[in-house]
Length: 256
Ligand code: MN
Image 1 (cartoon, helix red, strand yellow):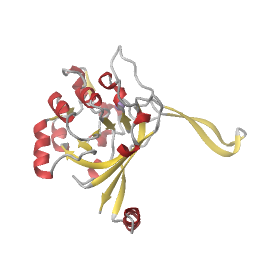
Image 2 (cartoon, rainbow, N blue to C red; image 1 turned 180 degrees about the vertical axis):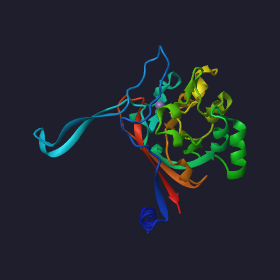
Image 3 (cartoon, rainbow, N blue to C red; image 1 turned 120 degrees about the horizontal axis):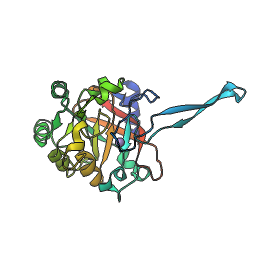
Image 4 (tube, rainbow, N blue to C red; image 1 turned 180 degrees about the horizontal axis):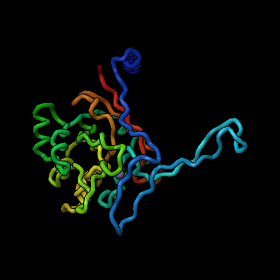
């Protein structure tokens, strides 16, 4: 048996389950909201071309429009000024779109404190219990925020002081950027905390990780269905030439 035959056999027999980490993409999909004077992204929209009618009697199809950073999506290094000489989303090597994935779960902490920030000590405690972060793989940061994904107001959780959503500290982002991981995935609207506009530097996860040629995955669903270690992730952004990111289908392969 080849390894592919073994894998296909395990998939067919249910010994490996495929979990979809992608949120549904529609005009209801929540999007980030930047304060003035910054420009904002458009949401996702379908524009019908024909639907079994005089415009096309036997076929249904749509045009689509969306920002690159809408819904479950992939952040490429060029998204941030610190990564402007790095890959655009079409240049990410295919081999890097498949890799190991681990989960750090801070959902209880984030339920108690929506401004919770992941610290280096949290990850060191995780590695002491679970082994090293996966080389060439993803660290997914579970916050429980996916439960709010259907509700723009609850998802962004903003008040007069700005958005309040979990993220990571400046020191943690700087430290993670030096680890041999591919990148970080989150359930929130971006990889940084809601309050990260006020950090020094602002948006440290974007700044340090994309600046180090790493990637981001955002608005993930179903992280709770993954084991802490031992799963594989497939991240499939569209190869938008020159693109800073792309809505992406994200799948996890989980042994059962
Ligand atoms: Mn993004």
